[in-house]
Image (cartoon, rainbow, N blue to C red; front, side, top):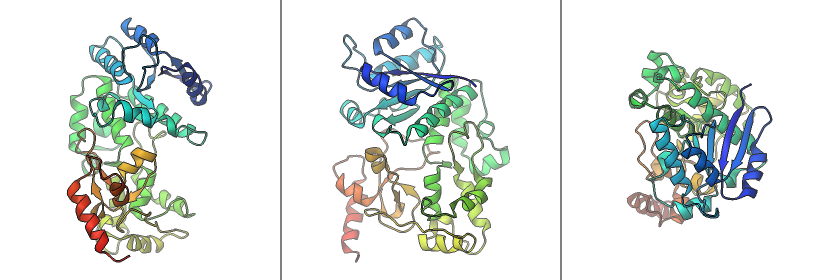
Length: 362
């Protein structure tokens, strides 16, 4: 077994020790706390060679430290570009309040990090999920050390990649001349909905409550043909979005695309084939009955995966420009109304849908 050794850069010795101890797994995943001063010294000596780095945002409590977490991460990326140090993943690891205070809506640091994990979300019930992400992103970096093709690294033959993939992603991968530049788009594709989706979004698109459906395993078994089998698949359970749609079309009957069906229509069709399913109930504040995406605003603020119907939701601007192989972002109407001052919300959508909701009988 290969030992995956991460460094956790933080200005609090107590927090370094607590999170390192919580995340470490003997003989598999080792998290070592390190001060920002020591990390910078290793970087300046070109001696920084971990499997990956967990980086706190605010390093101001460390005496004599002038850099911020994003600033130190930028220095690491520059050294990787010069090939003074090897490429390794950098994960932003901080409390949400610290991110809001130190970064806010500034998008300049977004592309420095492979992943963003909130310290707030690290609890006994989520440790395995966090560890899986760290193992997974390390596996991606290991796999793309040399030039790779999109179809090859994603586990598809060329014909299926043409149908299920995205040409711009292949182009982005082809022009990357450093390991971290090849790894970052792949990690992004695994973490954010686009041509790949996670199990939560898979269930949303089928109109099912997967947690309440004891027949959910049978649905997954049939969707094995659409399951992602590429790099780090054992750490990131994903399905091909177009593979799901192709499977739906093969079920026969109504030729309406999956996204065009209501929850009731999706549930009725699936119930003809599977038993013990429970239809999804749209949560309070999420309007519409054709769920297809999730609320980016809610996920950002609370970590909750809230389903939404894009036709009845508010377009939501990303902090940084999204590549066209990722899905656009939306906010459910309820959370959008509560966060009406957020400049990233489309004001025309918010005004139009708020007015329409007031006129629509409940």
